Length: 360
Image 1 (cartoon, one colour):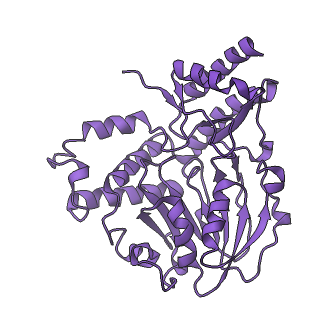
Image 2 (cartoon, rainbow, N blue to C red):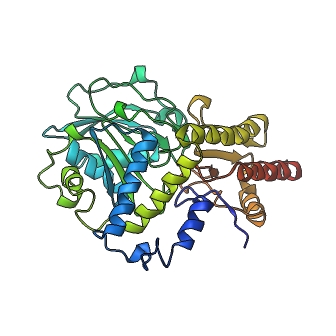
Image 3 (cartoon, one colour):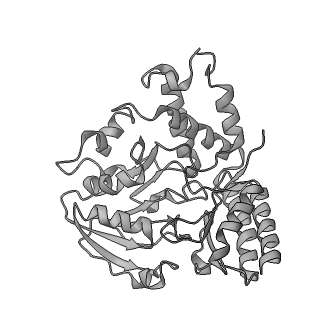
């Protein structure tokens, strides 16, 4: 069997050791005589799986004791509504920073529940930058400040945690969570879909400071009330059990590789291989400002877009797939999450060099 280098933005590549473990345990998890997919979410076997997954995630991110870790469903799209309905706490205003397509989706959804102040936007630069903190015009009455820490479509990423004072900072970290160490205590809430760096689609992670929950919007469904979910240890309704199991295996894999500091170095090294080549080539270009280039999603373009199809077909023939950019922006996008080995990035650069020699 030959596996490809999968540059998909999500669902994305999973670590091969995780897939091998899951395959070996598919029919019989630890002598239980059951697949994890068949287990009751309230049975002792799955409760042990869930407890270990939460413990490992808390350890990796050094989650403070006064934060709840929730395993939910609906992805970041659902959280765009769930966040304001939990965090407004009687208020009616929230600040949002607009850095790309996913920020825009968050803003549009939140506007159904509160008055959204777009405190800063990089629209004027075609979303190739992150607005400097000094230019943010925050509303003193805002219940929280929302950012998207990594825009998978445009390829911009915060490489710092912005200071917003005592107002809770909320971050959609769907595509860069667990790619590097993060000081959780600087955030009121972190959320993200799992299908990039954590596991298969269907699972949503939420890490929320416990003083922010318990005052939901009256129309909030019970299954999305953070306090109810926390009080029931993410078992208020049947959770995405198999996705939680895979996530636990991924957490274990990251820990065995040296934790998030080692993962950050791995990701910086991979990204440098690709960006360094892009910066020396006149055939390809990366539109994103260097100080906010994503280490997870590298957006680039060919000099002549008429060559895009030939480039993609040649890459696929060489075992590299899912390099086409998002339909809203075009071009190319190489998603190089935690599970992408450096050999995959080197193979991509080698193909880019070959293609440039033959088509420049």
